[in-house]
Structure formats: structure tokens, C-alpha cells
Image (tube, rainbow, N blue to C red; front, side, top):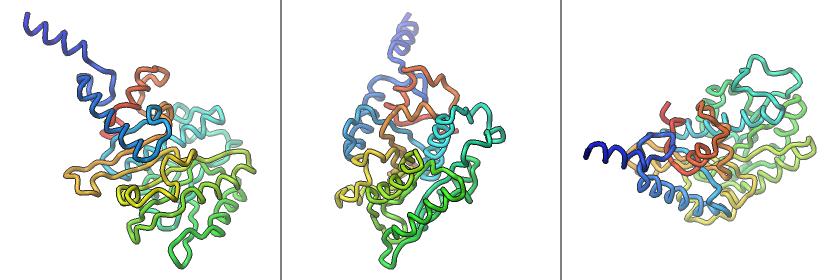
Amino acid sequence: PIASYVQGRLESTINPNLASPYMYDTVWEAVGEVESMLLKLLRHPYSDIGGSLVLKSATQAIAQALQIYLVKYYKNYNFDVESEGLLDIPPEIPNPVIIAPIQANYSLEKSARLIGIGSRSIYYYRLDDEYNTDYDSLRDAVSMAHADKKRIFANVTIVGDTERGKVQNVGLIDHCVSSSCKNEGYMPPMIVDAAAQWLNSIACGNSSQWDFSNPNTKAIVLDPQKIELPYDLSLLLFQDYTDLSFLNIGEQKSDKINLEARANFLTSRGGSQ
């Protein structure tokens, strides 16, 4: 009888998260609070609609973000790339590409290869002599992508690169890219790689609009292990938890409960596969 009672009590507190089918409410709520605190630190205007995933490295986090927005890109053309695959993409859909600065971490190239679009899908722009964004080079990169009949599905930028720790003016980069793409009838999402210097960048102020105060910043990568956390951990935070409905992990994506679980629990099978 005692065992039956305990089993019943455990089952009554189960939440539909993606990490363990036996997660208790207390832990669930604690982890949700951590997520909420981080979203607020990153100036999310409505932190209750943000979402997150935990992965083992920045490469995994960047690859997962790119995968999500690649799937979303094709969905905008009414093509289900998850079901049909890359080999059956209709020829009328423009090839998706990435815009990124030349000092982007090598994890970006690895991620582009991992999701199947290849490292040659990245259009790089240069920095000036002061290691700031060369906006003429940025505009040229966007123009070159459009001249090649391609569409930018992700605008990736770096906050606190590993070489000099520079925090670029993300708001201005986004404006530059978005203005050029708006003429083509679309708006690519901004993915911010703040893995190495995220805590310093927060402490130094967010005048560059690299966080969620910029409406077009859709995802941010943070690496707590870079601040001496004793185990591998990378956080992928989303402005809108519904972007997690494009996560390729096979659960029923229309299920509102599962969707909320993805948004409110910091660990998922997306990071442990």
C-alpha cells in the first residue's frame, strides 16, 4: 500500500517535459525561474513568452538555432523539409544562406555543415581597422547573396568574440541587413552568439542592442561554462517559445502542453541526442 501511494503521488506530480518523465513540480518551477531570470537579464519585454534549451556546447546551440530557423524558412514556402528532406526541395525556393562576420567562431561553419547546407552557404563580411563592423562590406555581402538568387534565413552576429571581446552594434547590424532584405520582401531573424562574453556584456550595459530589447533578436547563445561552471553547458534562449515548435525532435508539435514544456524547462532531448 505504501509503494502504491508513493507511486500514485509521483505520477500526480509528473510534468510533460522532454528530459525526464518523472520531474517533480519543485524542480520544474526552480528551473523555470532560472530561465525567467536570464530572459529578464537579457531585457526580454515579456519573459513569460520566452523559451530555452540546454545543450552541451555552443556548437550544439548554434546548430540547433540554425536548424529551427531553417525549418521555419521552408515552412514559409509551404515545404516540410523535415518530412521531404533536402533532396526534394522545389527548385523555385531560393537557397537559404547565412550572413555572419569574418570573426565568427568556427562552430558556425561546423553547424552549417551539420544541418546540411554546407559552409559555403555563409556569406561573410569584414571588420574595419578598429575591429568594428565594416558596414559597406556587410551591405555588399547581403547584395551578393541576393545577386546569387539566394535568401538569408539567419543573420548571425557575435557579441564578445574570442579574439578581442568586441561587442558590435547588433542593433545597427540588424537594421542594415533588415533594410536590404525588406526590399526583397522578407526579414531574416537575428541569432546572437554571446557564448564567450555574455556575462561581461551584460555587466557593461546593453547599449548595442544585442539582447532581446532588439525585436528582431530571436535567439541568443550563452555559455555558462565560460564563467568556470564545472561542467559542459550551453543555453539557447528564444524570444518566442513558439519557435520551439520547429524543433526536430519528433514530439507532437501541435500539443500545447508539450510546447509549453519546451518553453519552460531548461533541459531537453534536443541537447542530449
